[in-house]
Length: 523
Figure 1 (spheres, rainbow, N blue to C red):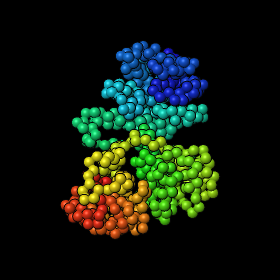
Figure 2 (cartoon, helix red, strand yellow):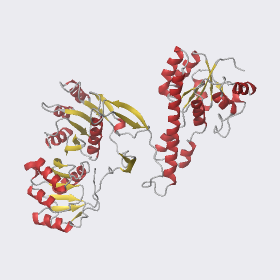
Figure 3 (cartoon, rainbow, N blue to C red):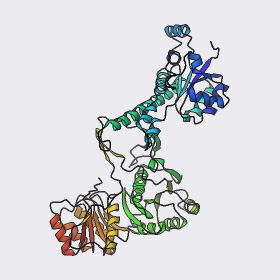
Figure 4 (cartoon, one colour):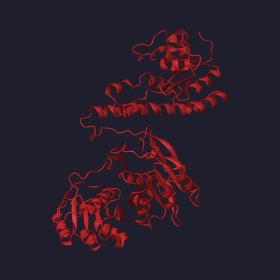
C-alpha cells in the first residue's frame, strides 16, 4: 500500500493548463492517478503517474467506457476516514483515499453544436464516469476537493502552497462542480428532447431550464436604484453580444448593452456598408451607402438631435474616414460596435479628446449563426419564449396592390425601409429615401401618431420617399398623413378588414403600395 499522504485523481477531457497544474501538485507531494488519454498526456509531459487500473486491479474495458466505475475509485472519493465504519472499510478493501479529484467532462455541448454531428456521435459524448466522480467528490467535499475547471488551477495551487484547502474553499469548489453537472445534464436533456420531437424547429418541451454564467456585475440597471448583472450562455454563438470584446472606454452599463445589441442587429440585416444610430433601443438613424463613412454620415444626419448620446453599429471594419466622421466636433457617442477597427481608426478613436478615455469600442464577429434562436421575455411568475424575428428577409410573395407599381428606385427604398421597420418598436412607421432612414415613429399607441411623428422627423426630406409599417394600416388616416408628407410608395403586411379602403386612399394619392404578408411587431 502507498505511503504517500496525499493522492489526486486526474481525468480530464479539456487539458488546458493541465501540465503545469499537475507538475505543481507533484511538487507539493501529491501522488497522481489517472486514466486513458489523460494518463498518456501526463506521461508524455514527464510527470510520474499511476494508471488507475493498476490500483483497482481491473482493466479498462469496452473501449474505455468502463474504467473509473469501480468501488476502489468511488470508495477513495466517497470514503470518510474520520468515521469508524468508513475507516474499517477503507482498511479491509485496500482503498487509498483521494484528497483531490480533478475532472472535467466529455465535450457534449461542443459536439452537438456542430451542424454535421450525428446522433451516434452525440450519444458517445455523453460522459458517465466523469459526472459520477464529480458528484461523489462534491458530495464528500468535507474530505475531498473537487476541481472541475482549468480556471481554478492557479488558485487551487496557491491555496495548497499556503496550507490545506479549508472547508469554505472546498465548499465553493463543490458548488461549482454541481453547477457544472447540472448544466451538462440539462444540455443532454435539451438535445434529446429536440431529437425526439416531431418538429424540433417549432416544438417546445414540457420544461425549460436555462443556464447562464456571470460575465460581469454592472454598476446598476436601467436606473441607479436597480441592481444589475450581465449573464451569458455557457457556449455563446460567435457574433453574439456575449462574444464581443471591449477595446476601449468606460465600463459598460445595462442600457449600453441593450443598445449595443440593437445596433448590431440593425446593421446585420444589410450586405452593403451600413450604419445604425440607436437611442433607447430604437434606430433614430440607419443608412446604407457605397462606403462605411458615407453610411455613417447618412445615418447620423437622419436625426442628429436624437443621435446625441447614441450607440453606433457598423457592419464593416472601421476605417480612418469613418472614425474621423464619428469624432467630428459636437458629436457625443456612447459606444460603437463593429467587426473590427483598422490601425488608423483605432489610433483616432483612442487618442481624440473626449474619446480616448470614454467611448466604449466593442468588437464582435458579424455572422448569421445565431439567427432564429429562441427569444426569452420575463413576465411576473413566468417566461415567454418565441423564435426571434431576425431571419433574413425575402421579397418572395410580395405583391403590388395599387394601380401604380413602385419604380425601381422606390422598390429599393421599400426593401430598405421594410428591413429597418422590424428594428423599430411597434407601432412602427418608417420614412426612408435613398437608403436612409428619414424619420421613425416608434412605440406609439396609435399608428396615426407614429405616422405623424415619422413625418415630423423627416420634414421636407420625405418628398418622394417611402413609408413602411410593421403591421397593417387599420384606417386610411396613416396613408393620408404619409401623402401629406410627400410619400410616393408604401409597404405593409396587409390583412386588415379595411385593406380596400387603404388601397383606395393610396390610389387617390398616387401612392404605390406593396403587401408583404408578414407582420413585424416588436413590443
